[in-house]
Image 1 (tube, rainbow, N blue to C red):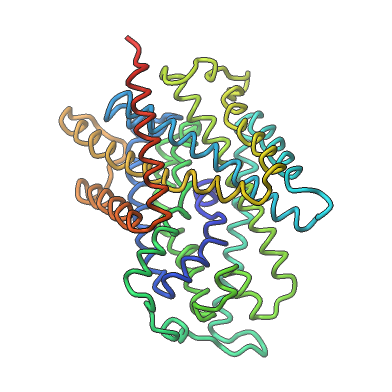
Image 2: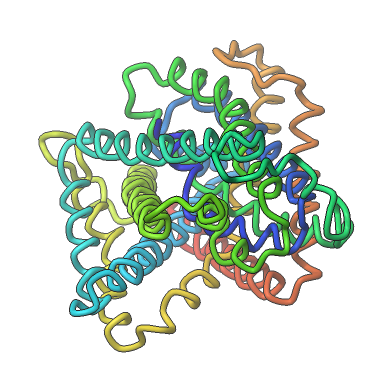
Length: 430
């Protein structure tokens, strides 16, 4: 449920509208490509997690494969990404809730959300897992209900509402109205909608049987992506013309509104808030465990490794949410500026994580084969599928280089990664 909940977020409920506006019905191809990358990354992570569970996950594996500096750069980059995203998610959820209660300013809601989820993550990890389970259950239920309603609309099972069929997939300029360029532009948005699935590699280290847990996740992730992501997008572009203005603003709400269902906007707003808070909860957990692992490996202050009697790294949790409290002040001073700036800061960091996973798996698998080490789980199709994953990630980077906004994010990410690597080299202990 954590793996599924991490993948179903605001990127699907809101960001999918922008992707549809760029590619039309052919956005299904964009989701298929991005989903393929995620499946391959998860399969590679499963091999490494089963062999050596670690709360540092891909940072630990990058250190094993490419050295201390690489592991440090990947770990700190991921931690910075999550810390900023925590603040962004709290800001996004607060903006929606403030619209329901105008008397309470957004910064108050940010403070409330950050404080509440800090407290949750300071309890035993079972408490965090329980909250995340129910958050995921709400999102999964919403998607299932949406799919059922969408299929009924396509088949004409709603009284007084004519069947839509699948004609909209080919109207308004055809299946790919903006051609390959539109599919590529949508891919840049879609890729980042899948961010969060890698958190299960961190959580698996704290489960009773990491190998069994990660094996189940990988086995099911392909089906889940096909059903929930591709299914939802198929319903949207089948029920409504892709260039309908309402699709850009809120594709799920737009579909439900055509069926004259009451209270649609409020229900979808609640689901988006749940999605944001769920992701925030998961990211506090992931960030705290990553910086805890960095401390264990001597790549961060040792104080971050102190735990409560229940094993919770309390200082790591507080350090990871500190910027969230800073965001409270920023929201008070600059209420309309904070969210866009935060999202631009971490635009391309996910690509660094995925690339590190792919390269690490190739190196560690080759090393295991040379030494005759038995692996509990073996990535299928090695090395061809591993190299295919590298090629797909490289392709996304190339596409991003031709987009002005994405190119700026790429340069910022590359500069930060290099700076973190240099700092790790300069601070190497004897």
